[in-house]
Length: 456
Image 1 (cartoon, rainbow, N blue to C red):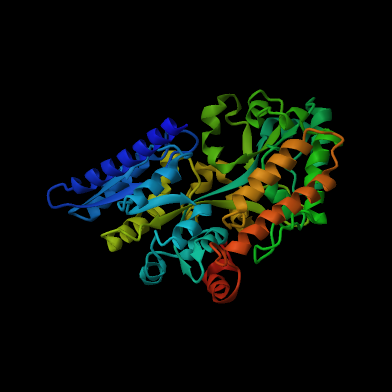
Image 2 (spheres, rainbow, N blue to C red):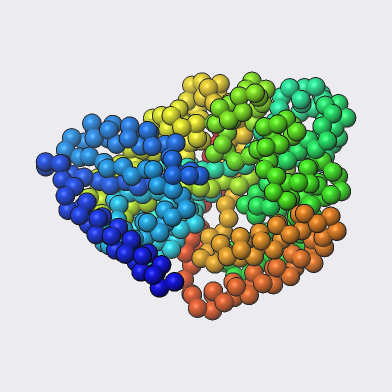
């Protein structure tokens, strides 16, 4: 064990030293150098690496004497640890991408710069062009420390050929979902027409919101997952498997939804938007035979919408240029190039108004509704533990596979455990890290497009 710790420490020290040496010898003649970091989606390979190299080149053309060094092919898993190492070493990147959940932590520790002044003074940056749920999550108190880069959302991918055979359209409600599955069972001969990742707390969030349920209170001090509306939502998904029998029960024991889609056993699935642009490549057998639709609504029409923010190091020696790069890559022109080169949805939603966008990228058909209905998870430092370690592991991965599960009882028990962790956190921390919905910050967000949102 001691040897392993020493090896890890040695690697960390080496990383810091190499980072410092890299910074000391980064000059290219008299060029000013900016460093940019992002991570790959899934593995180490970043589908956006080509875009980032292209963006760095185009930015340098517009800013003679400036070059942007891009670090794009880093795996998502250890990305934050690698970034933290650079912060500890005193030589972090100037600009970087981070998951929205880490924004508050980095801001509270004084590692990243407030962007409020730049946002207010830059005539080319328009907050109303971004999803309100993501604009909100860039706030720490009254100021923004992150600007949206990429927003992911859930949508229905459905087989148009099978839906036509059954004479049905994508469901607009929970009741229609069951009814349409019955038609697909009868007319298309499918045993289990619908599929979703039922073991993931991430994919459960929209169902809870759609039923009027909540995960936590506005002040993030009270866990609400054990209340009736949240329990009913989880029970409904459980019933899709065990009562209504429209979803393959093996999805609760490890079968991948994409395998059911690939083999044609499922006629429609809930999929993340980050995969939409790759479907024709991954599943060429369904090319021209599938389309995208919004999630079915419960008592409310709600979709998850969140993802990545761009942030600036507080230690950047060239903050004005760093902002210029951030503004450049979030421009409508750059974002359209990103969609074209990666097949991933844009952060700047003005891209969707570009001529021919809907025809060129039909797999983003559900994007307008997802933006308007978008919500994101509440970000408090203990949220990862209470939501994933407690709720996902003790509810989603347990009750979904058990036809006789006492869903309500298990959820109330877990809610008590989640509350204990939350209480313990607040007993030792009196600061709030992200998205606080009160006072001046709330009024500021409302004036900044939080209420009106993004209109098509």
